[in-house]
Length: 437
Image: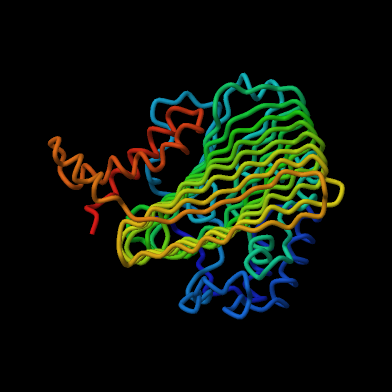
């Protein structure tokens, strides 16, 4: 349990008290105040907005949740799924928007690597972090949730790897939340020119049906020739409202492999953008979604080609049970100067119920004339012949469906180069599969 000075709502008075409680440099306080002003001036999204037309948030009430204040006592946190059998370079844990603990291996600390609580490190290394922080991968004026996050973030994580440093062990960041809690965590990953790293990031609730409110941001900044493998597992309780903006800026000849897995939440609305800002930049994004009950997961992806000779490859796969609903809306945007672009996006959906629904909306916006951009989408049901074939060989119906679902996701699993992540995702999905209706 957490002992804290609870404030009831997100008001001007509570926001000022929130700022007063934080030990932060003046430039960051001013940045928060500007974001709060934007938050107060923006309207809540509605079904009239094209981006929100398929995402119903009428049941969400911000006044049911509290702004995070410093805590004096922490309990246990949920177990992590991605770290079994893995030797870590460092770990960082937060609970209900408050940093709990962090550790960084001495070998990497000596090489100038920073990893741990964003709250703490931004206060201790403000001169180093400030230009990256204010670069603003995520625009706080994008919508009301982005502005709220920029103004009130707390309990986030930071990874900074200096020029030319290659870290051959993964970092792990866990954001946990109690039932009915609030998580406003912000993750900032900075790799300087020629640096390499792997980061495993996951979210977790204590109980499968726990509720709460998450309004988060992930910002990834890759310098020239940098190489990052980033894994993001979303496993909140099925009562959590999840709103997040995630964006990467990839510079010249840098490479990003970004794997997301989404299995939790009541409703999740995520904007995942990758902007290729330097010539020869490369990104691969792998998405795994598994839904059940009345869950809704909405992902809007953008592959923005700003510079020439860049490559982007987005592959999202979703399996849906019960009355769940997924929305994937993808866009490849190519600027006029981004000649020799190679862009690809695809979304495949496997319906495990007659009542499940998958909306898939790929798109292209191309302003250059020497490009190769393709997109595709499929939706289908489980083939009863495959189930019958497996059952004839001694498998139960549920075991047969599990095999089919595993095979459906295999193309994604084959792309993941981290064995522990492949195994953890496979086990987590298999445990959720029920018999096909």
